[in-house]
Image: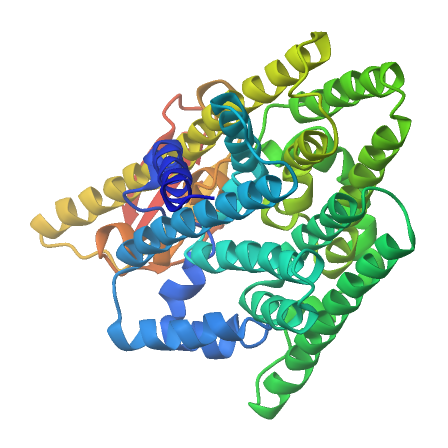
Length: 483
């Protein structure tokens, strides 16, 4: 590939992604940031998260961050922009892999390849990862896993592939499903079908990911012990309870896309792709291609199961292979068939499916990140109400040292907040607003008290139409919230 095309692919990816993530480019306060605000960068990196969770590179990076001590907002903005740039290089890697197996002959080929590459990386599951201050690390692991498989399968550099995968897993291991699905995809692209060489290549990738996972687990078990730290809670959870819990939410994972994509739409696109490809495969007598697609889909689904045994609930960032599923299907069909080059109804239908998914994917990212932004604004608005009360009483010579919140949920929020309630991260809305949130947004340091019994004695009107009522009793501000 010419250098100018590589630069163009990365730049276009960055521009589209900056537009897609516009609403949180000016900073975003995610739920996980609370642990940082309460402990500080150093304690969070060493005593809480990264050492205990096997993310050594993040621990080292946050030691450096602790020395500089930037504001969380600035750190998040830098992380988000870095993540977009890193993932844009991942888009380029997918493009280069496709180009390796089938060179572009027309501008249309290049456009189709770019769209496929983009939707393979910037998926709806990736949105979840982008809300965290560690977004750059998650993005780095995605890029490294793709490069590792490429080095192992295409370039036959197994040792280098192992080293790159090892670095990737010590950045963030939750994206391992992407390594798994990329391994199967590249084994198909390299070997064309199930064969001894296919199994050998797949076995090499399996050994690599098993070894790096074992090394990562050894670090999680040994290093915290040597440093006198408690083991990560994930190791202490009842695994049977974890599996049972996650099984109960399986419908949410599959059909509701964890709120990160319109209900049932992702499944519908998978089915549309399968119907088009099945008919095409029968007509062209390439049933083996359809079988391989089914194998890719099954692998994508299975790839996330090991992680679902480790922790309660599921998050978009660990469902990377699921988010990539449509992109994976399109990469395979582009490289292994002529469906995108032939002028027939199948080419038109699959191209329309691809382009509409590409557009919906971008619009959905804008929608979700706008909800994230609205979540922050809800917290800002609530924080400012508390701040105004503190200042108002201060002018009267009265001091507020603490606050207490009680939520009465009569369902009225369903109408007012119906567009954000499924994926909102607002602490105010979720009923988990605390001192750290208030301090982050206003700089005011108050203690949060839990004195629900006082609300009855304070003569609050529990049937009032107001969403927020406040009363000061002694040095505590009592806030009744009716959602």
